[in-house]
Structures are given as C-alpha cells and as structure tokens.
Amino acid sequence: MSRLRSILPPAAYVGLAVVDSVAAGRRGPAAQRLRWITKPLLMPALAAATVPAVDGTVLSRGTVAAQAFSWGGDVALLGSGERAFLGGVGSFFGAHVAYVAAFLSVHDPAPDLARLRLPLGLWLTAAPVMAVAAGRDDPALRAPVAAYATILSAMFASSRVLSPSLPAGARRSVRAGTALFVVSDVVLATQRFLLREPRPELDSFVMATYTAGQGLIAAGVAEVARTRP
Image 1 (tube, rainbow, N blue to C red):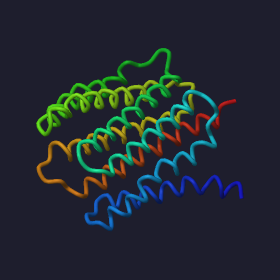
Image 2: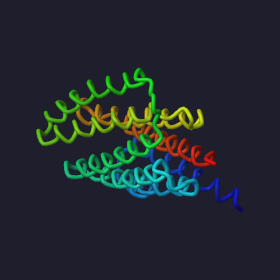
Image 3: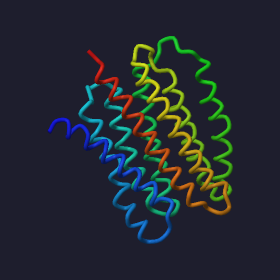
Image 4: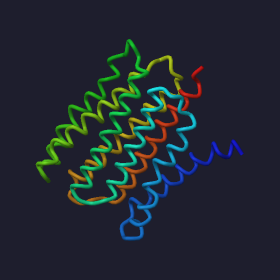
C-alpha cells in the first residue's frame, strides 16, 4: 500500500500533463472544457508527489511555494484577455522568486561564473525583444514582460550554481527542469507576441515542456531531501 501511495501522485501528474498538453493544441469548446479540469489539477498532483519528501529546508519549502504560485498562473492563463495574462505573469513571477530563493539556499559558495553566460545571454536578448514585441500590442505590457523575463533568467541562473555537495543526479534534474521552463516560456512569448498566425501545435509544446520542467525540478528537490542525513 505504501508503494502504491508513492507511485500514484507522480503517475497522476504525468497523466494529467499528457492529457492537458494534447488538449492545449486542440481548438473548440470540448478541449477548452477539458482543460478547465486538467490544468488546475496539475500543480496539486505535483505537490502531492513532492510534499512527502519535504524536509523543512528552504529548498523544499520554496519549491512547494513555487508550485502554489504556478497553480495560480495556470488557472489565470485559462482565461483570455489582458487581465488574465497579467494575472498569469504575476503568479509565475512569484513562482520564480520562490525558486530563486530555494536554489540560492543551496548555492555553490565558489560558483563557476562561466555557467552564468547562458542565463545572461538569455536576459540580454529575450527581455528586450519580448518587451518590445509585447509593447507593440499594448504599451502597458512592456514593463511586466521585461520584469518577467528578468526573473525567469534569474531563476535559470540560480539553478546553474547549485552546490556540488548535492547529488549529481538531483542537480542535473533541476537544471534540466529550469531549462525546459525557459524553453516553454520563450515559445509561449513567441507565439503570443511574434507570430502573426497562432499555431495550435505550439500550445501543446508549451505545456509539454512546462509540465516536464516542473516535474524535473520537483524530482531533483525530492532527491536532495531523501539523501539528507
């Protein structure tokens, strides 16, 4: 029974992620109704898989807080219009702040600064490009999008300077997860602000990379918690 309890939450998360990713690429009221069920359940299912491994550290608690903020973003982005978009941006901004705090709590005291070149390049390119593109649609979006690109880059950077005392597999999992999160958001911004004709298959890609990224981060954090003395 205990093994079943440990398997069910991750399996539920994977199943919900697959269904929601497929539905995201479909058009029509049926797919939209399905997503109102699957998308709000994603983060609760992931939290159910993560919480048993939480050990009271900033890393664990910050990860759970990030999942809670992400839930708010998931629900907000089910809506349409600028208000829903800004609600989603604000919620995910909070999620990235929580992730930054979590990852920096276990940072390498003597990090290899070369690891920060990619996040810095991301910030120097994505932030201005997306802010300008968003401002063409609505000048009021320019500052929120620039701020979001900045905290997204900071989250990615913080995951790349984890302490070498952490298990190597956990570090790889977290880094892969944050990289996928970045890919998801860059494609989402490209779809929303740069493409003239929306491509439904990109919506599926956004959700697939986002859910995989969140899952990998949670798996890495759980591994750290399990290996602590």
